[in-house]
Image (cartoon, rainbow, N blue to C red; front, side, top):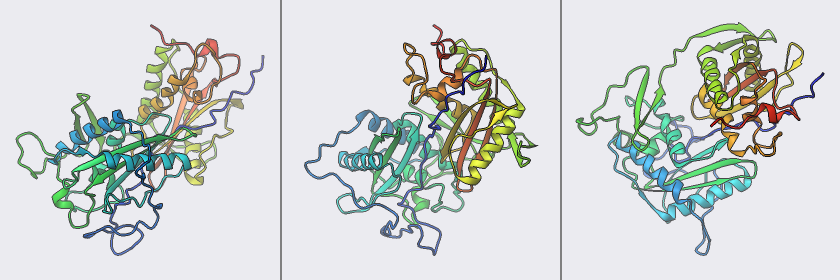
Length: 408
C-alpha cells in the first residue's frame, strides 16, 4: 500500500543567533564598526532609542534576570572581575527593546542609553528552544575561544564575551521576549559599558585559578578549556582546535563534500538516547543519506535559502530536519536536542502532526531505521545542519503507533 507524502517540518529549527555587539570598536581605520576611545561612536546601523516612559507598565522576568546575573558572576569570577549588581532601570530598557525586537521580528542593536550615557548591549536570538538566563550568558561567553590575550582588543567574534567579563562594568539588566513566529529575543544592558578601545588589557583578564594572583595568566591547553559552572556543578568544554577525523566524499550532485564522522556519530548516539525513552529502536547510520544531507547543507550555505528540499532516497520520500545556529559551533548533540525539545509541545492525547513538533516526531518516529547528517558553515559563521531519515516519519494517520509516550 503506497504511503501518502510525509508532512514537512515547515519551520526549520533555529537556536541562538547572537550578532556582534554594537558597543564594539572595529579594526582601524574603517568606520563601518564602532571604535570607542573615551566615548562610543554613533551606531549607524542601530535602531532609534526605544526606552520605557515613566508610565510604561514593564513586566520583568525576574527568574531569567536572576539566572543571567548568577551565570555572569560565575563566569566573571573566572577572570577576576567583580560581581555585577542588578539595575532595574537597565532591565526595563532591555525588556522594552526585547519586546520591540519580538514585535518586529528584527535583530539589530539599539541606540539606547542609560541616563543619557553610554551603556553596553548584548543581543541573542534562538528558535526551537526556550531562552534562559544561563543559556544566553554561556553563549555570549563561549566567544572566549576566539579571544587573543596576546593582542588585547576588540574582535568581531569576541565582543559579547568581552562585555560579559569586562572588569569595569558594575551593573546589568536583562529582558527576554518571544515573537509570534516562535523566536526568543534576549537583550543585556551593561553599565558602565565595556569594549572601550585601549582599555581591554586591564578589563579583560585571563582565566585565573585558586591560588593565582590577579592578572596572572593561566596556561590554556591547545585542545580545550574547562570552564566550571558553579551553579550547575558541571563542566563545559569549549573546543579551541577541532581536529576531528573527516573523510572526503562526493555528493549526489557530484560536488565535493566532507562528511564529519564525529558530528554524525554524535548525532546518531543522541538520537538513540532519545528514541530509547520513547520505545523506538536504534537508528543506524546510512552513508548515502549523509551524502545527500551534506550536499544540501552546502547548497543552503551557497544560496542562503533556509528551507526544506525535495530530495529523495532511492526515489522514495525521506524525512528531513533542518537546524541553524550562529555564534557557536553546531554539534550533533546540540542539533538533536534542539529538535527533541519540541517534545514539550506534543499532545499525546491527540496524536498527529502538530505545529512546532515535527522535528521531535521525526527524531523518535518508531518506523524510521536509518539516518544521515550533514553540516555546512558560511563565511560569516552560520552553521546549517541537515538530518535525513529513512523510512520517513510524520505520516498522517500513523502518529499514534510511531510517536510513543515516554516509558516510565
